[in-house]
Length: 442
Ligand SMILES: [Zn+2]
Image (cartoon, rainbow, N blue to C red; front, side):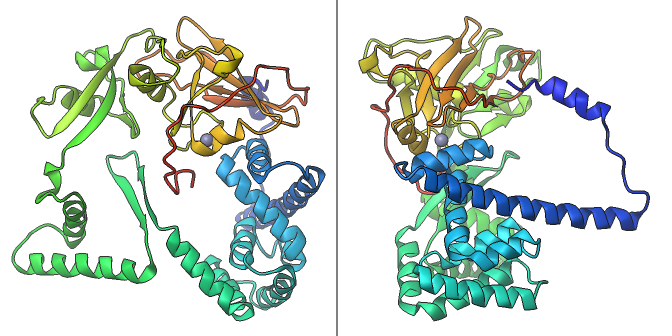
């Protein structure tokens, strides 16, 4: 297990020397960028080779392993797997441009994404055409490269490009994300002509309200109209909400300023927490108040076979996001770490919150999960072993108001010892809700 404190100390002891002049600094930045691109090309080749060594593995399982190794989410790991195969099989010239630093990883990915509907011969042709354009125009930015790759793809396969638009439109959805500063982002992925209609309608109404004397800014009016039209309320602020608030007792009594936690949103400042916790019950905001003691949220057990009711809420509040390291997707499944048929209890200690994708990955060949720590003070740690024998630890986040444990600081850490996975009990996902919110893992 890497000792973070020791690594920091050794980094500080060998602090690097810096270039003497500004010009030399700029030169070094450019050289480092070349090396990053070269490393990205090597990672793509190694990933494609890994894929060829594991013909029986699903993309879900392989992508999750790539994600864990690169400290990225499983969703991102799967994207990187697709990118690596695309570069290795279909884009030898683009891969060479990545290797020599003409392209970076992000731009190579934009190209591969645009061409991924082409068959292998068309893709190789597109590869040559795009590589020639980029060699002639090395100053092109992300957007230009994306558009030019799309243009080449559309020309090579007009029917496929049309089908791709239709497929993208069939995947329309709405997703939401808290920005953590008291605002949130609602993203509607809709057909492009509808996007134009939505914006035109909001701006037109905002203009006419401004003209009749409304003193809010145009941006504020469009945001308020957006909420009012979607919720059916006549005033945006009147929209009723239901929130779950975990607040330290000291914060509630105004004896401390430890931030509280709003489930699904993240931390909120102490004064906001107090205002929410003391909100009038007949007000528009319904608040379920849960008070974190200096100990932890108490452990719970259920006599049923499902994680439901308070136990389900407890696991959601304890884990907050999917427990897979670096995943961070919202929890969709409340899973038994050790499956019930293998003797696992329906208890908080044997529970973990997972996103839908990670819950299914756990079912794949060669993956095992086990609880390695569940202390009286509430620390909950799960070890994940992958098909290659690598192990990763996931620790539930510290509740608000709690004493931060001395080490490690992160909620998850990777342990890569290459050891054979233990013959742990089987694991399973058998009681999750399965509403697939598209874009969750994005
Ligand atoms: Zn996940």
